[in-house]
Length: 450
Ligand SMILES: Nc1ncnc2c1ncn2[C@@H]1O[C@H](COP(=O)(O)OP(=O)(O)OP(=O)(O)O)[C@@H](O)[C@H]1O
Ligand SMILES: [Mg+2]
Image 1 (cartoon, rainbow, N blue to C red):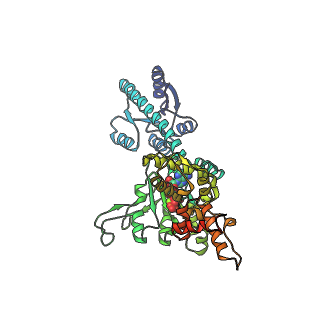
Image 2: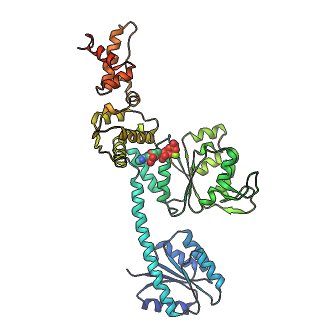
């Protein structure tokens, strides 16, 4: 593959001379006379190596380097600095330049630097490919084929690269954390930290120091200084779980982080910059809290620039069989079991259940049933009774007119429960609160045995 170098130099003679030299090395050369022209070119195409002068009119080499770093481009940057200006060179390297060359240019050194830069670029591209396939796998970790999940996946793909805040809403266990993680790994911030904070788990003062950090001596017991989550997440993504439980003072601080992109540690003088994307999750209706005055309206709109609502599992029951098989395969392997699947009526019963704890509840259910069951399939009779009962459709529930003979009611209750448990007599007895022997006796009694 032929390398493309973008040469940015305001002095015409040097520019022309370098162009000839580089073309002699079988390199495609594009040229620009200042940083701004270079930006215009790089907005349109992917450049392998950027060879740029530092001192230029309009936009200098350091600002150009800043732009490349901010854009997270995989372009290798080499700067041309004035002879003896070591400070400039150090600044450039610190900011992310690959190397620097001093003027006047030493040709063998230039050739050597370009060769190493080409190798570096190849590594970067390989990494990019690896990351892409990793991202595809991350994406595939969200199991589901229902229309609801397809719409959600489309939105995730669309929103992930846009560097703005996202609010994810949905009931407990629907996959909000998981989705936030996928968004981070598909975003340009993926190589930077992904930091989770549970806003509901800590009391206000602890949460404040957790988020923003503190300086030594800022409060009783602060015998050392500590970085906050915003500092640790620098350049990456912060996930604020259960954002609805933030107190109003912390909401005010958070608003400032978003609006001014900076903050101070508790007791700190120095203003620190906050370069983070905020993903927040809420399982309550945040707008209702805004109406009650418990959540700041300005913050609400800052957090939900983009929003995703994850539907509860009962509204996409078509995904249940897929999820059951996904987790069964996972746990069969983990627990070295030879479970092949679920019987049809077991799947039907599980699809009828409302899963109030959503995917998390389903996952735990499959985990424990994988441990408990020893055969090769999971049957309806293996399913715990609370799931079977919870899944019983309303029209199948029993109703009796006043005055119905007790034996009739008993008969209906027994037959019904037997159907429900797939004919499992011990489970039926357990559900009815009678012993197994009593059940057998009742079953052999004339009114039931027909
Ligand atoms: N579509 C899915 N495919 C595979 N696994 C999923 C899916 N949705 C959720 N899970 C799994 O379910 C579990 C719960 O998900 P997660 O923690 O993301 O839920 P949550 O919405 O953040 O819940 P909470 O509101 O309680 O924090 C996790 O183990 C997650 O991996
Ligand atoms: Mg969560």
